[in-house]
Length: 237
Ligand SMILES: [Zn+2]
Ligand SMILES: [Zn+2]
Picture (cartoon, rainbow, N blue to C red):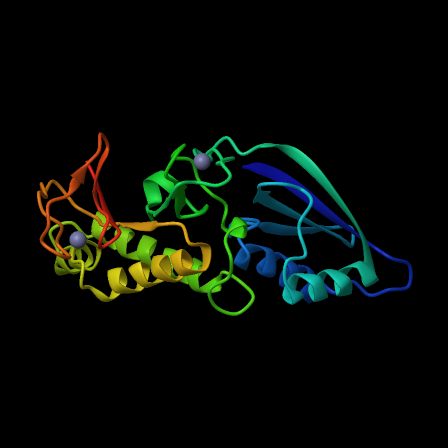
């Protein structure tokens, strides 16, 4: 991921519309083009945003992005500069086209706040904007699920020995939990749209699994993970 600086220089006699800048960044985030941790600062009447993203040519993929950008460009000149590489980002981007399959893995340690999808061939992250929308003209449903998952994972980490730890672990490890049912549902919808298998990574903490907790059949063992092709489940080793 790269860090970009987006400078908004107000046009003469126009009042700067802060809401359209915020709206544009939020729409880019919901579309998967930038991460959530963007900053906006003001200096001498000029607004600048600093964002993490994959490319500086932000694509107007939906009407939210289009409309907020149109409004923003009416009140200011926009200059986008690449400032450098995000050194805290551990993910490298997948360039396979097509990928044989995808894995959805929401995980604070591994994927931070980028895309939760990994390519089955190169195991790199696949930016959200490369996937079709499953609800409305944005990826908000995936962004929300990913945040919820990470929140639960955080609770599991930070509430050791407490009731919250057990409940969080149950949400992540039980194939029938609300969390996992929703995650698998997202994978299922994407698979239907793209006609490419989407596996859901089921959390497992120091627990060996020989059989799939969904159908009871033996896993197909690969070097780094166990797969159930019927249930589209993956458990990392
Ligand atoms: Zn790939
Ligand atoms: Zn199964």
